[in-house]
Length: 313
Image 1 (tube, rainbow, N blue to C red):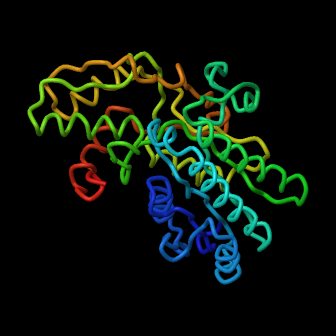
Image 2: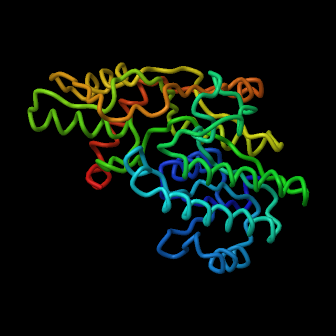
């Protein structure tokens, strides 16, 4: 990408999209195109077509998505599948039809089988059953990356995909039911501290292992790949390091300043037992993450405290 290339970031209000915008601006890209959901519904095909015909972006970062944690995915699988399928197909198809030079599709590590080999290589895609609690979202994301692959094969496009591990950081969603595990823990322990509670109850038994990547590190990788990678196979985005939910909860409690006890509700689901990405592909290209987990959580908690609107939604 040239510094004056016209770049469209879909989903710029979200955690990932806003991080990509910040990274683009840091690196001197100034010709950015963004459009809020109120003005452009990406699930509406004709609206997306008109947008691309008018704006004619040269490069596209597709970070827009309907996202949520276990509770949200369990309650509304049809919504997660429909909205994500529609918006990604509309944007990817319009990018092809209107001659976009390169598109980068943002997916999720949940695309890999529930019992995939650990760490999970890109090649294990579609080799086993998905985790039931987020199957609808995973199927939508698989469809998006496969559509990019098929367009590359059939029409010679340069559309790539990146599959991040669990993300966190500025502009995260701290909703009590719709958030992912780390922002949910930040909010839960903060509120427990404010209310002087003696204990916090967490779901499952704390044994699942998870990997977490600070969102600004992901944004750095997204730009790196846009400028240095072309290919049909997706690229994993992670740290290559994992932590148990129990240890993570204890770390968040300590950072937030909660002094009570943590209890585990084993009647609630654990989710996938282990999710660690094989990040050797990105590493071999010369990319490495830079934000350690504890530092990232401290930055995230500061963002939570300084943004009361985000904290309450």
